[in-house]
Figure 1 (tube, rainbow, N blue to C red):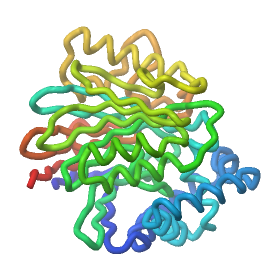
Figure 2 (tube, rainbow, N blue to C red):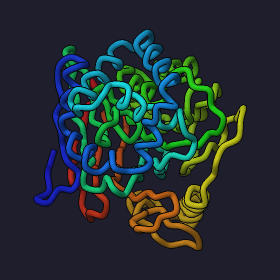
Figure 3 (cartoon, rainbow, N blue to C red):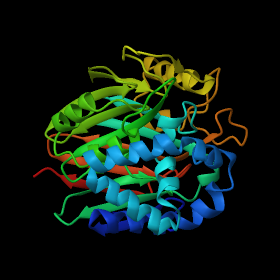
Figure 4 (tube, rainbow, N blue to C red):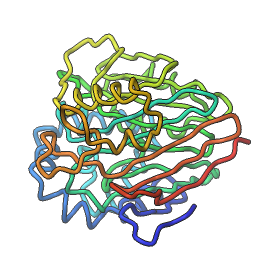
Length: 342
């Protein structure tokens, strides 16, 4: 890992039991959550008591199906010094509400070295408060993941010690009747040892808000596109250079989805750049051209209330997975490294 002298994107190490990992992540995000998130109308809407019956049910199902993640959420709440059900609700935000400010753009470049390039777009109030979590459990398994303060890892971009690369985009599905939080599934995917295991998980458990995953694994360089949510699941292999914003492209939706102007414009602009022959993934992620709203988002009046908070260029081949993590606008990566396939 190499570090720049000025770092907007922090680095937090969390080790031990699930509860201890959650507590460490909660402690790391405590100030930002209390000072930047809790005053927002959005936090108040998500954590409103009207959602309490659903949140209580989702917590119970999480405990039944994924007890280690439930324990991590308990640790997260204690580290944040907030009531458990408030933190649980925040981690169910995309299941409770369709229009959440979790944007993102992923560029997918298949080949002998597959590339997942990703802009993590979220609440602009969190600029400078996000971090990379280096997580290692008691068995020595672990991952690196971009983290928002107050949130579980697994819904942004990540690389695991088993050689899996993951990039996640929000899908704004309407009229979802959730049975398990989508962010719990994202966290569970980080514990999978193979892509097949992750695909089986998402095909089995998808009564949740919507997500799109781009997945690849060292030693098997197929690039996978997975859309799920609302009881539906779709998987396809990416065979040509592609992109994905914040609406489902290949899933047969049982309900409607919301497509914002930003999501539509970013999807079109990525396709336009790829058709022009642009192959530099970072150039695409940093693009502000085109006729519509930009891929790289720094405007204070973004219509989705989102800004680009971090970016990742992740490369996967037969020997391992390597990464370059950037803050909002850094010309050089803030962190670089690799996991060698065993």
